[in-house]
Amino acid sequence: MNGWDWIEAGQRAAQTGRQTRPCREDGHCDAVYAENDRGGEARGIVGMVAKLAGVQLGTNPLDGNIWSPRNMMRVVEAVQKLADANANLRQAHARRNQADDKTVAALREALTHLGEVV
Image (cartoon, rainbow, N blue to C red):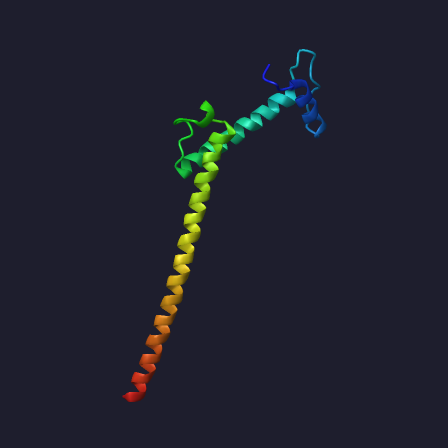
């Protein structure tokens, strides 16, 4: 056994309001299968985000398991780096816009003075 109590997990899932049959004596629980399906869907989404972030989960997976929490954390770390890079670019763009605003103001003032001279 892997330390997972399938009957308890099925009963817990059933108590959360999901429509399932109660667990059988042999441990088969529709709720557990449904929960496993949702986990598979979540892993699929993590895989898609990993591809977008440039992370190859299957290449040298941490803990030897593609879907281990440590290995999937690589996706979170890559997305955080992308978010940080995006924030840095936004800050640089804002600084450049402020500098451009000062330049435009200086040009406007110069043209105004030039018009007064002519």
